[in-house]
Image (cartoon, rainbow, N blue to C red; front, side):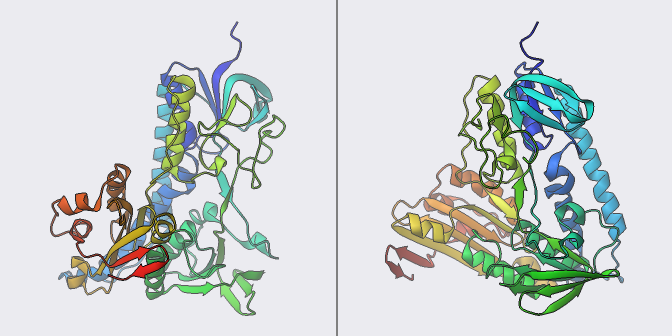
Length: 463
């Protein structure tokens, strides 16, 4: 009789958990995976995929306006929220089915129920009241929105979990927060026709991003009609019929149809049994892991947002794959978190990889900046006032490109490819030696010849 029922038991069928299960199974491991909601996790079901579909929908508003400049006669347009929601649901259902199919093809047994950890090698299936033993347990339960600030009336708010399935598009919405989720939904809802207000605790949006780009994005969002309230948060939310009356901490009031909280996410570890099993958690409940995603209990590992490392889907996938390689493939693999590219799918879009100007100036003796701001070719005919901003951060002593940042159309697509160059240690001279593709916006990255600023420790020398 086998010592354990399975070699691996995975809790959570998001991107990280599914990848880990499939790769472990490909190495010959017997694998079970439990999911209490829908297969696919946050990204597929209520995160980046449905959000990007809504972003696409919102951008048609600009396309219809731009079309006139290119000679098209566009009749009066209207937007159908219900049709978008239904289309979104159809696509995520299709993707969830693909995830299921891939698990089945890999030989992974899917348990559609909640599972909790009993000890280092036992998992209890709550709805079935049975226990399964496993040589290794992987926690891949992701995270959940944080309901902050905890004010009277918070029960009347929604989060990014609910925004995708509202029966009606809010005509007036207050979004609380200044991170990815807040600015992305603010930008897309404004283009779909909502009156959007963003209440941000800080003095600017997107903390941690390059200062020049986050400021340029904020200004572009203001031009799009979004009302920012910096340093201001809700103090009380009262419901009056279908309307929410929000009292702000500056004494002002605001009447809206919805209040969306986008103030952060915490790991899904509550009542999972981890502490009872001896797994150490940090202050917000994240599983503490080493470079190989191993927890303080040798047989229990964790990947993805539940570890509070870098909360991005591709990172969770890489962590899940590395875990399977390490534990079941006899190929110890630690994930490299340096130079992770990322995009913010606002309009305009923001893409970034590597160090910001501020980070580079703190870490390096001499930093050169190459930046440009221009009106893209499409806007010259459409008449739109949009600008594209591009920036390279370079080590002034070695010529190595430390960071690349872009605000404008297709920024995410550009930064994905820029990430390869930066990961390989490309120098500014390599960018200069690369032939441009003309006419494109991306060509600016290889035609930036003039240094716009040089910073040395304790001394700024503007070029």
